Length: 313
Image 1: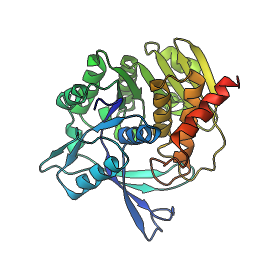
Image 2: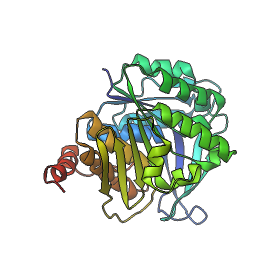
Image 3: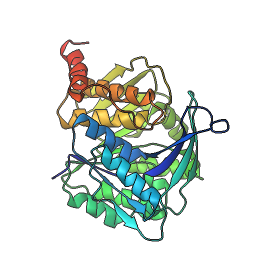
């Protein structure tokens, strides 16, 4: 079946303290799966979009676990390949309400070998939309080339790029700023946090971010717990973020992107897309997992987001 969205990028096994305590004092752990692109795919699947994940994993037990976890969320993993003699990446999360710290064990992982062949496999599925993130180009030269190729070759397929700046993956901050801006300019839709845009490019307002990223049809600037602003061909739209009791903040951006993209796919107005993004982000913020699970029927979330638009709020 032709997927609505293909998400391409690395997912890893993730070890998280089961009780939410700091890593140094935790006594039990949960092994789960995390990765920016598979997080988005899982969020889309929860909302009812058909989503596929394209990547490479090792021919190891962690690779089997990652594939099973992502598939259990309703995501098609048949396009992901296993590589002999390569290992699946792993990372440890040290939870904190003000921002978790992570330690990666991903150098030389199977997914660091992503290439144009994997992009071609994604396009062969004939998706309506392709989603990528700024994590992938930080992994290797072949990964950077693959993302550049994907954004340049997506004829008839709309694209989105979540800047997703991870400073620990970029030894050269200037290279990160130049590379991520150049890639974002090639996408149809860009997601970026106001804080990461400031760190990368020195911008301080959503308007400055839009001026810097002038080419995409839509640029969505997220200002944490404050609001999100979308600059589109139809105008500028801002929606406040609802209050949330944060358990753990990692993964909220991916959940937001899933909500916004689902809204785009089903034709929601721009304010409703932002609201649906906020609702999905809220589910992630209240979970220790990188991809929160919605506890209400997806149709209810969509109607809540759209009702506010109809009411003119």
